[in-house]
Image 1 (cartoon, rainbow, N blue to C red):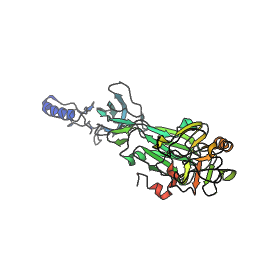
Image 2 (image 1 turned 135 degrees about the vertical axis):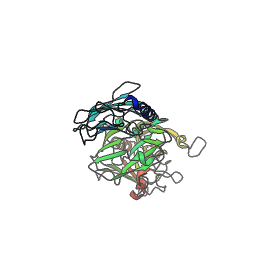
Image 3 (image 1 turned 60 degrees about the horizontal axis):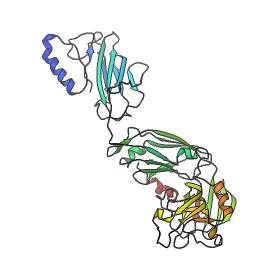
Image 4 (image 1 turned 90 degrees about the horizontal axis):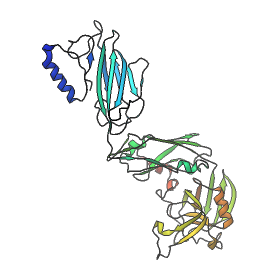
Length: 406
């Protein structure tokens, strides 16, 4: 609300006191006019028939606003001569831009959480008569602030890039209740353009994938403009974030449980075929596209990490070489010298895709994060969408249903 003050003559003191009480109640200071002082609380006319300059400050309520909401000051029937917005605790001045016609001032930097700002405005009309007005803005104080963590970590793939199957994942540090409001502030811009959509795996994790695998050579600009966004339950976005990913050549492995062979395709061309052994009947490998999420030359595998512990006949604990994770429940592509005799003719593993040492090293050198392993005829169930990167197990129509924006 805009509240203005005009200098009053002594005989109107009781009215002035009433206006002052209203002004204090509304937590806004008053305005003054260097011209006519007896015009009933408005700035005097610059000349006969001309309306006085008036000032407005937005947001009007001034309380519990998002720090991402800009402060906008406008002058009607005149121009702004000076606008100062200051943090009352830190005594720092907020930057802003004045429009070319000097009628509007807009803050150009975000405010802070749980902060109070004074707004001091000076305006004038064409005759030189002035109005001074003050206001106060207070920002919301969040109970918690959620950070937008990105998977894969941009630094981890800065040199290598990601494969054509790589979903983009925002993992928030606190649950999101207002999913649609948050999703509207998320974006993935691909160059060349590709159609894509978000899917909420749960209250903290939202994934983005295109309709088809990424085109090799694509650049992805990923943004979360969540600072000041209300996540619900007292949680607000902690910061904005923008990162860039690059998609390298297409590397897709096709593992077939019938032939017990795995073909490796580079940019659509078969460059190698190798014998494999997948999960046995009791622990079959999941069907469908898998995405590599981690790799290590030597990795300790313990089935107890996903609930199959010592005492269970399916328990295992061993160090394996040339390992690349393809699901979050223990499925890897790795070297296994104990299953070499079965590779190419039978499935004997706990769900992993086993290779001999030479093939495992070749696979490790050429396949990396975001590359795809498509599993067919394994006897297993489809990889669940929640199993780290089960994103491609869903049809495009099913995937779009996971968006919070309907």
